[in-house]
Length: 110
Image (cartoon, rainbow, N blue to C red; front, side, top):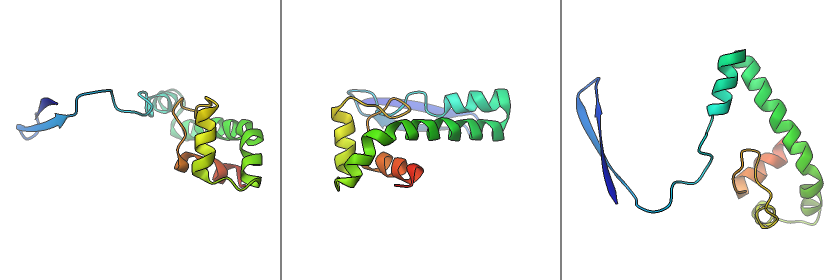
């Protein structure tokens, strides 16, 4: 484990946290950086609308793969496993999880 120390200028305190050794944390390393950049260039409402539009398009593209599995009675966890097995990534390039499939189903209203 690696110990890191951060000093906060506002209150001059030192926070020490222990970071586990090993592979880096999972998830999108860019986080919401792309959305923040879009907002900075086009305004917050346009940024949110652009993100919704992209998410809707991605969900629409996924419908042909996901809909048959839902009709066959697959659980969200099983659908996530199938997507990961096929090497299909989420819109942000991450692995699928039960909750990401649930959000996809909500967006598709299926």
